[in-house]
Length: 432
Image 1 (cartoon, rainbow, N blue to C red):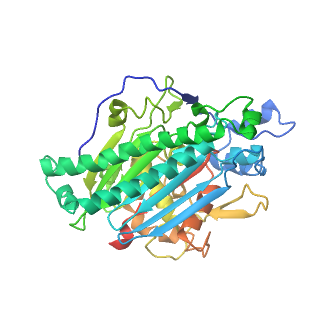
Image 2 (image 1 turned 180 degrees about the vertical axis):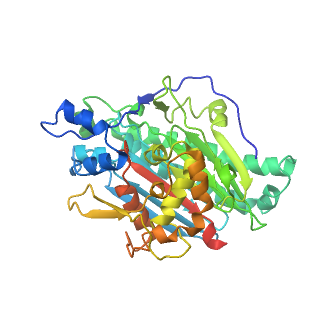
Image 3 (image 1 turned 90 degrees about the horizontal axis):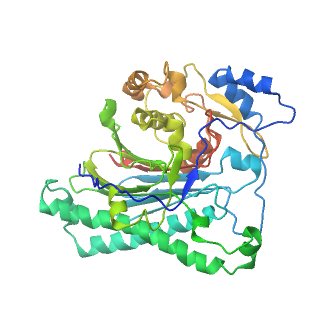
């Protein structure tokens, strides 16, 4: 594995204070004594309480660009599947505000690419920034990687060479530089969009001023994965600016060796802040420190915003729990005997106009606790957990993988989990 480890001493231009305490929706007449009582409840009791308090409110149309409630996407490639979904968080639904996340994917027979962005909740147009950034970066990667593979037929062979060789380093650098440039392209697209909006009366009326680039602040996570000619390895190049998580998972490995983090969540001046796409964070020195490359046998790549990543902290070993959750709920294939065993899936009311109950299974129900030791034991039994899956209980949350991912993201319940949730999975297992 080769990492670009240059550090960045510059302060980011913009940062956003992120709430780290539990946010509960307020009901009229709720007393301080009741709040104190809730603090003493178990996680399950708290979830049963809060799941019934969240209300669904349509997005308030202020005349500016509105985000859709969700979007989902599925691509079947020659080497595997790409599954992605984005949902509006419970807090946004409760308050009638837009989702700030966006994602986009691209692929050819030579690579898969995914870009995931989380707009700053404190910025009025961050949903536009996240959409523009994800779409422009994914388009840039598809066009330029396609051209690179077309012009250089030897690149996959060179990526299989010894990692200290000039052949590997040059091929690695060619792909990594394109991933870095995709972040710069995303920022350029934001500036181009700003030129269109700064004299638009709708935005002037809503903001009370001309829009500025900070109104579009967003995190930026991009991953490119290349299946290599030996059929056993994948080369991965990633850039992460801001919070969230990029993880490469080898489902054939045990212990911590199965999890490889492909980025580091950036912090601002305070521990609860993050940083965003900006001229500072895409400078050559800064973006080098935010780039990771890897070659190995990882067969699942996951790119997610903090709305998902925070529910699975710390990432090592909790990304293993995330993978098991995806299998238990039918998003990824689940093996093993399907004769149902307790504990059964848990039902909570959806935060939707219909308020229908949605049943999901949680890996944490199957473990003694969430300690690393308990997670290690659960991971070692991952191929024998089919009896606890939704399938075993004859429950389906959607006909297609992307629909099941979207429903799972939308209805997953965890204490302090109220943010927008986006996850893209690049699954190579299906081709093995």
